[in-house]
Length: 236
Image (cartoon, rainbow, N blue to C red; front, side, top):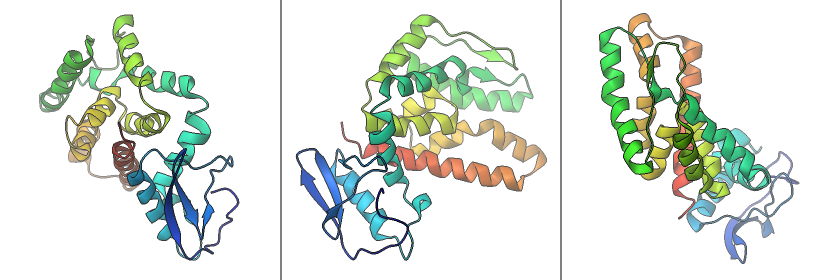
């Protein structure tokens, strides 16, 4: 959004195809990223979504209402130029994956975690050839170097645009496995988000909602679902 200021001044938002990819123009002038790179997008569907975000702006630009634009900017300005570092940061979630840390009790919570988390661990074990170490309580558990290495290799196969979305899928859920399950279409993103919330939902059932925590959860859910949509628009 570099160079555009805060005021909406354009009348027409268009999508064009260029040698670099799909671009978006405001009254014929191509949008650039904050770092003044070309906003070259990998698919027309992604470009159409970002164009719709720009078309929806009224009076003043509200970046918080433009998640796809922000993600595309991050992919080009940050992830593309620091790909290895970002991939390593995300892959490290496998060391402390949410699904491997189980409650010691009560039994109803333990059973709920087992019912929803075990199938995802079993899926990932078969899909990626990994073995998971599971622990109860707060005691840490180490995953094998082979498991972590194979997961890191999978993360490194993403494009910068995919990796940008994947970052939010993993960070918002706290689980590398859940993030991978979204990218593989194992379950619907909304269902996988709910799987990541088992512990928090249990606490709400026991003690009631906390207004601040509820607002934070809603923000994370929106970011998770936005990331899932962005990933699907990246193309193969």
